[in-house]
Amino acid sequence: MSQPDISVVVPLYNEEESVGLLHRRISDALQRANLDYEILFVNDGSRDRTLERAEAIAAGDARLRVVEFRANYGQTPAMAAGIDLANGRVIATMDGDLQNDPSDIPAMLAGIDEDTDMVVGWRRNRQDHLVTRKIPSWIANRLIGKVTGVPIRDNGCSLKLYRASVIKRVPLYAEMHRFIPAMASITGARVKEVPVAHHARQFGASKYGLSRTYKVLLDLLSIKTIIGFAQRPLLWFGLLALPFMIASLVALAAAVMPLFSPDGELILPFAGTGLLFGALAFFLLLGGAVGELVYATGNVDLTRYSRISAVRRDSHD
Image (spheres, rainbow, N blue to C red):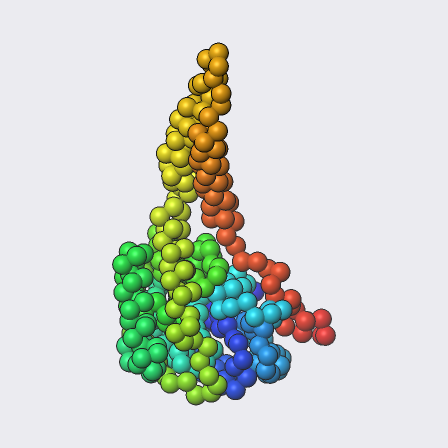
């Protein structure tokens, strides 16, 4: 079996009205471009008939695979699962609500060349509410660019294309999908940004809003830490621990010095302070060790999804 030119990964959550039209638009766009492709729909614990409808479509299209999560884990784990299972030379991600336009994919694919590992969509004429979506997004994109040093105009656009050999090395967890360009910068990925179409939502309600702002801020803090400490986390945490270790040794020395005199007693305040500083230094070093472990083993958790429809279909043949 030859390797597909492109794999399209689409997380789905309660998109029963969109899934049929979405599949048709993706297939039409890639067939017109004469591309060898596969589609992965990742059902993120939908509570409606999204899974049922997606599997019905997959029964008639061997190029579509449906991945089922046991519960709703979020968009990033769903993307990570699809990326992990994708077989294409290039991997595209997009939303399942029909706001991204699959017809942009062939042109973006042409942008993946020797000098570019990732092509990021930029929703120039974004069809969203001004106060609840556009303004917070504008502020967030500039803040993310300042903090991460990767100035992307539209981090929130899910329509992105990646060289598979690059994106499969990028650890994704929590709500990190909007920070993929910044995460990929750790691996030295080269990024190009292109304008793409954006459509108003046709079905259902948006899953995003101002309530997600605090998650973005927490994730931004995490990504800054990752980028800063990614190469040598134990070294950097060791440097942070060093002053506390020195303070601990000084305090403990001051506590025990009186014991060398005939009537001297242990100075408990100094001893307690020394132990506290020592414990803090130890936990910082432990944090660095955990950071080394997480960075080295940051792969998708394959136990989060229970089955892939293509495997189950084969079992009925």
